[in-house]
Image (cartoon, rainbow, N blue to C red; front, side, top):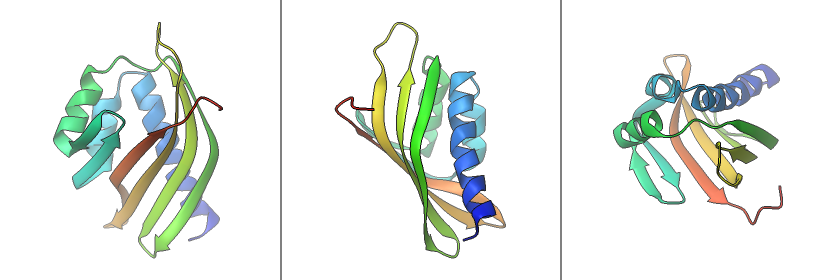
Length: 124
């Protein structure tokens, strides 16, 4: 995987957070998530449809930051983007977690097949 491809995957992660911040998460992830995608959150596991519906109902993030972003090629058309995230919603305490998104390339486009959160102890 070259630097351009890795940068494109990091940009997809940032675009997703931007969409969740500006209220367009449902539309963004409806286009990005592969059929059969799974999202693992601290509160449970969600399949594609339920995750997208949840994003539509969630309060937007007020602010976020992604740190220590790395891209890990697994195979020619599979890669994992891993990072530490800090995010906050209006009136809530900050959310801090380690995240990983697994992407597969299908028909030339990257699609997310798995997204996972592991909350941290708040040291971000």
